[in-house]
Image 1 (cartoon, chains in turn cyan, brown):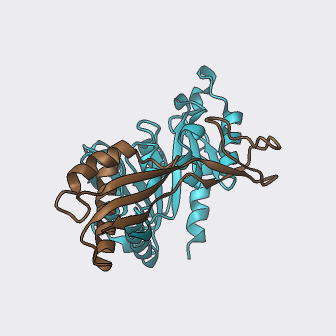
Image 2 (cartoon, rainbow over the protein chains, first blue to last red):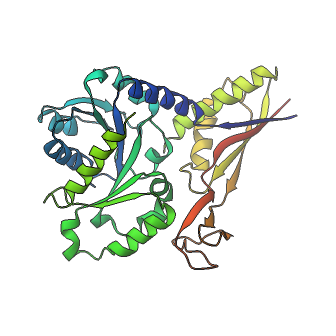
Length: 216
Length: 113
């Protein structure tokens, strides 16, 4: 006998994500999930934001397979940070975030960055309850990535091209890349920045501030 | 790469369903997996062989129905199956496309005794 099930296998994750979102909304926290390959600049972007975003209270949830290296760098700047070590899991899931949220005083936070595990594949599958998904692609990774990691590029609300200062020495075709990304994700916001030189960071900061204004 | 938690979630869903219909044994699980979802069939099978032991799905066969990536042109509404790296509409050449199939990942049905 065949019995229809028709259930999304990641449905349990989505339910927990919805609870996280409710908790964030109740406390007026805007949460941003930051995803990229290892080394593309997730921590650098957060550090640049800490430096340039004034007058807002930030918190960071750091996801890593192991170590507290990134959390230490952020903690040094006086920002509240919770480390999640996934112990081998290639992504953060909604349950891991719910545990981290319980450790933070959410009432005092305006903006939360969730730094996902460095990976362009699995994090795209798991909703955490965040308000926005931001992905970073760094120039050395190449301009063909939208076709190689389509799920990531179609689910991102924002795509940041980092390490733009390397453009003179690389063959990255920024126009073609932007056209590809907009092709598969027409509503996407695109920023080109260098976390090293600070180029383009002000546009990113303006966008963040507009996000915080939109908050209900 | 996250197939361990995926298999656990899958077992929870099918066990619950089997209980609901009082089925003692699941003989087949029909899964639908889209081309761009990051699920590897062999990897799911590998974990399933371990984790299904002593469950109602212990002897179940896994069947994967793969759904190819399907795109719809935002300009001329043409629906097509793209070649890797070529997502332009073959009809009008536009780069603006929408993913209309290929990201699925769900349990379609179970077969029970």
